[in-house]
Amino acid sequence: MSINLLSKIPLFSSLPTEELDGLLTLLGTLDLQSGEILFNEGDLGEAFYVVLEGELEILKLESGVDELLLNVLQAGEYLGEMSLIMPGGHRTATARARGTVTLLSMNRAQFLEMNDRHPEISNWMVKVLSQRLDATNVATFRDLKEKNRQLQTAYDELKAAQAQIIEKERLERELQVAADIQLSILPDELPQPAGVNFGARMVPARQVGGDFYDVFTITEKHIGVLIGDVADKGVPSALFMARVHALIMAEADMDLLPGEVLRLVNKHITRLQKSSQFVTVLYGILNLETDEFSYARAGHEPPLILHADGTVERIAHSSGMAIGLWETVTLDERAVQLTPGDTLVMYTDGMTDCRNPAGESFGLERIKNLLSGLTKGTAQQVCDTLLKTLQNYQNGAKQDDDVTLVAVQIK
Image 1 (cartoon, rainbow, N blue to C red):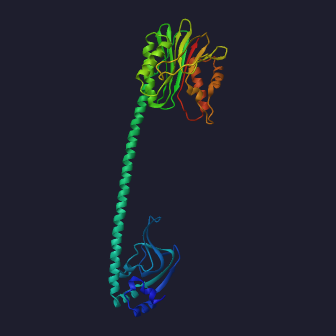
Image 2: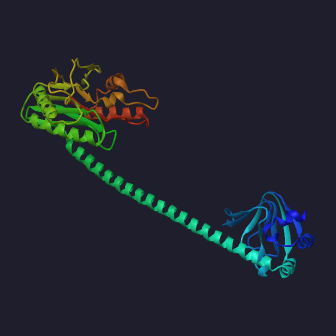
Image 3: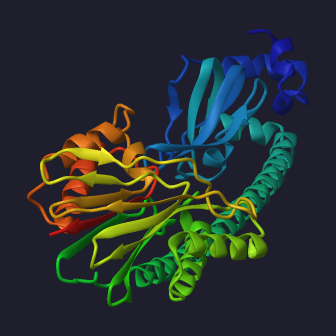
């Protein structure tokens, strides 16, 4: 190593040439490979080092695993002077080579001898120590500011998450209230007149749905049967469903024909409605003396009849319009004569549209084939078996729509 190269190191740049020449005979050299440790934090400090070539990492090892890089020393910078100034001192950090590194090394005796001859070196060390202290203070302040910023961000995110949890809990409570209200609209018990039995099941796709049904007494001789499907799911459809149900029940109490009831309801809905929602409905009246079922169908699925011999008939139908679309509504109105052993089955399109994990819909033919084997069951057993078979077919696939069934059976 030449004297010119040594003179470029700031710590020795003020020394005369002859001192630099003598210094070369005192200093030893040390070569480190990349990743090699010069000393570890806590080691006893016995030497002073100057980086001649390469880079030296100064770092803290937290928990023995996580590393905190404090500084990277370049050629011309030095370290370890405090261990020489303060005998018995220990290393306050770990030094590790970044790439190949060449160091000059000086023990305590060499350092003290050089410092006695050239006290200006001490002044330079004090200056460098002050600079390091300032740099450390700046870095510490910067780190504290960053940690405060991160803490504030975490606090703000925690507050936002807490607000979301509170809002979610509030919405869940409101959904539960809406579900309870929807269930309260459905009949607790179905009428049980002599000679007829009724069945019904409903499974919403969400916590609240848009399907509805009802079976209610109009007079001693007449039973009203209702099934409907709002064209949506969730709370908005449940609210619309409740309105439609209430209007139908109010008009049904007037002892009107099914078609008259639905036309009046449509008139009310189109006059009051301020959204694009609509509903398909089938409303019928069963005459308990004649077993005739007269009904009006507003865009709903046509009903099926399971006869006593196991044949399944889809009742002939004409076109019909859903309620809530236009002020004038076209309905499919007709009367069906039921005979002993017949089971009339009404359903929403969630039944036919339900899909299995492969994406195949359940379809009308599966319903008809299944019904043909249910001649021995009651109306409620027919509904229960249909729904159970549908859920087995679904086999965990997502339910896209509400499913509702209503059955009327002549004993």
